[in-house]
Length: 74
Image 1 (spheres, rainbow, N blue to C red):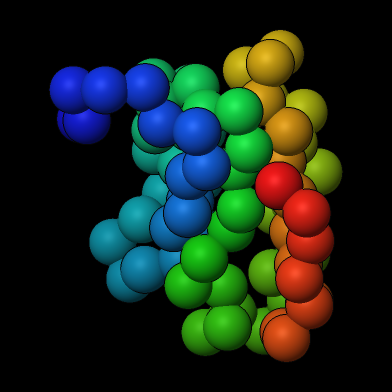
Image 2 (image 1 turned 135 degrees about the vertical axis):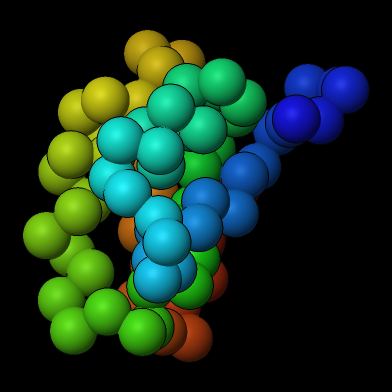
């Protein structure tokens, strides 16, 4: 776990050993201002996880999923 506050978190959402509950726990433990899913390209339909991760994020965290090549103002 990082020792300092994390402003923007690249949130890993796919790995052979990763469970959804671990993703939620990690995002809650870090409690960033913005959380952006990463490593989602290996999933066929990663967007099915987005509502879960957004709903279970800390109240002060903005979950922001981006399309490939898309950018956003943070």
